[in-house]
Every structure is written in structure tokens, then in C-alpha cells.
Length: 421
Image (tube, rainbow, N blue to C red; front, side):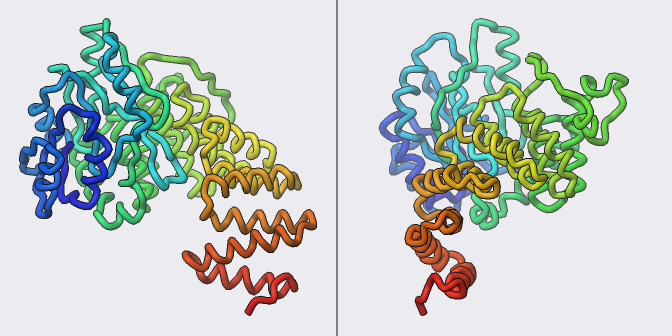
């Protein structure tokens, strides 16, 4: 681990691994709180490193102190799930694997709730991190595979890591966006066509409201990967309007990083949706979900595709997109809720009720699901059930959205359904 001022989150992180790992190596990059002392309490070997605005440099320094045969990398705002530990114990005894990719869940994210991260790997002398932000071992691993083709890269099914650091409040509190942009911009100045940085920095610019700069980088990255495939005369592509008139056949090409390609399409979908170019946004999402990547990573793509199709009036298409997302991950709360919304519009009330109830079962504090369940129950004449759902919605809204609670309460009174003062 590399850490700085993580006294709040570090105990939970280290507590999730203390009975599993053989050693804990913590590299402190300048904490002014009790982070080093807390790490030491968990038996960690604590080392120190002067921060130089480069995550890879810090991670590579931490690697120097590792003595084990396998390395698990965590950040302080992450925890290892107990369910994955038996699989981890099993896979590290298999001789063929160099790297095991792990599924990470972005807790609280409704856009991209899962990612695949290279966080478990052998203590190989030629594995190192690269890039100043979003530090990766991927380039060094590919170089090793070229020289030592006996190795394989695997992945474990099921969520291995829970990550809370991308929640909006945390990002704002720690000024993470500005720090990330500064680190990536410095690298980007010397690597202006690095597709990974085009994807990450472009997406970050979009989040920061720098839409034009973000779109330029995302399109640049996309051109680098598939420009020659889509445009045979090799002229630069300013956008992918050709996606609307040209069927894209997906085939596996070892030279293409499909995870990056997915992210580029995904964030361009967000960008064109913000620019109100819904057909082009839909085309990007459709291209994204066709790619041969780990299915869990496609949830955000299918969900956003469903939202756009619903906005365009293609309700059956939206329903199919949401159902596909739920099939990939039956615990995808947002997918169940959105399926309920489109079923309600289509008049499929029984399916809508089932969808809302599934969302509520997964998240009992989902006020909007209760509220819309109340609407559908009222439509089918179940007034007692409807009032019960509305009461739950109001009580939940009162905690987090008092104005909506008052609006809903007033609306029910005007309809003669509620006499509460």
C-alpha cells in the first residue's frame, strides 16, 4: 500500500486482510496524522517516501520492500471481501498464472459499478508500475509475456475489492479531481497519443465540466485504436458519425485493448448525450456493449443505453437493455428501478411492480422506488398498497429530500388519498 493521511479508512482496510496476508508493506508519502502508527498497530512494515506527484514511483518504491511470492495491492479506501479469500488462496498455488485480475466494486456508483483491476501478481523482478496516475503494471506484464510466453493472465469471478473513493463527497473533500488532472496532464504532455491517458483524462475533464477538452481527448484515443478500421484512408476522425451508417462487426484482435476501447465509447456516449446528440450517443453505447470484455464491466453501458433509448421513445429497446444489465448482475439496483420505470410507461404494470420490489429488496431505503411503486399500485386500483408505498417514500424523503416529501404529501392530500396534517 501507499498512503497519506488515511487514519480514518486504514483500520477497515487492514482489518480486511490481516488474517490472510503474510506481510503488510505500507509506504507513507507524508502523513501528518496517525496513519503510520495505525499501520504499525496492524503489524505493517512502514517505510517513508517523499511524494513527487507520481503514483507509479511510489508504488515501485513500495515493491522494493516486499518479500512474499505474491503481491496484493490495496488502497486505504478499499477493502478485501471475505468471500474472495478462499479463491485467492487457491489461485496463487497454480503455477501458470503471472497476474490475476480482480473485480472491484465502486460502492455507491450508479454509472460504472464495477471495474477489473490488476492487483494480484507474482513478485516478478520485471513487473513494475507505469504512468503517474492510475498506475498500472500492464505494460511491464505484456513485455514479460512476450519474453516468457509460459505465463498466463487470469481473473477471479465475484467481487474481490470494495472501493469507496470515487463517491462524490469523498472526491470533493479530498480535491481528488484536481490532483488527478495535474498528475495526468504532466504525463500527457510527453505522451499526447497514449490511449489510456486519453481515456482517463478525457473522462475526468468531462466530470470537471470541460466538455470540449474531454471530447477532444476521447476522440483522439478512439482514433488511435480503431481509426484505421473505420476510416480506410487513415484520415483523422473528428467523431464517429459513421457508426450510425456502418455496422460495426466485433472481432477479437490481440493488438486492441478492449477495456480502453469500451471506456472511450462509454464516455463519448456520456459526452454526446450532454450535447443532446442522442443518436450518436446511442451509437457509442451500442458499440461499447458489443465489445468482448468482462460482462460486469458493461453494466453502465447497458444502463445508459437504456436511458437514451427510453428518452428517444424506443421503450422495447430500453427494456431489453435494462433486462440485459440485470441478467449480468441480478443485484444491480439501478437496473431494476429503471426497468420498472420503462415497464410503467409501457403499461406493463405487473412487470413494473416486480421490478420496483426487486429494487426495494436490494435497497430498502430507495425512496424513488417506493414512490413509483405507489403510482403503479394506484393505477391498478390497489389503494391500500399504494398508500403504504407512498408513506414509505415520504418517510424516506423526509430524511434526505424534505422538499420532495412535502410535495408528495401535498399531492396525495389534493387527490383525497391522505388526510395527515
